[in-house]
Amino acid sequence: MWCIAIAVVWVFSLMPPPPMPDFDSSDKVSHFLAYFVLACCAVQLFRNWAGLLGAGLGLVLMGIAVEYAQGALTDNRMMDAKDALANTLGVVAGLATRLTPLCDLLLRIDGRRE
Image (cartoon, rainbow, N blue to C red; front, side, top):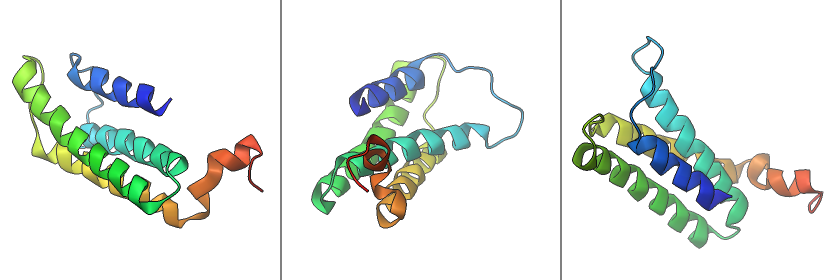
């Protein structure tokens, strides 16, 4: 599922942009939330810090690569460093859930952890 979610982010990032609400930061909020969710999922998947930090680094690099691809491969999107920053902040916030009781939420929902 996590790999599918990553693929969905790539697809939506390279598609023509949908109409967005009027406020200036709506695009940045979308970037933050997408990468926050991906990083939260990584927290559920990777139990040790090395794997989790590797996944986090991979997500940050993916966020930068997506921005580059938007500028280089599409005519209807443009590269934006602020989007890459929003992606990175989403990853950091998502990884921070490792330090909270939410770190094993999916296991608790599934009944594998009390």
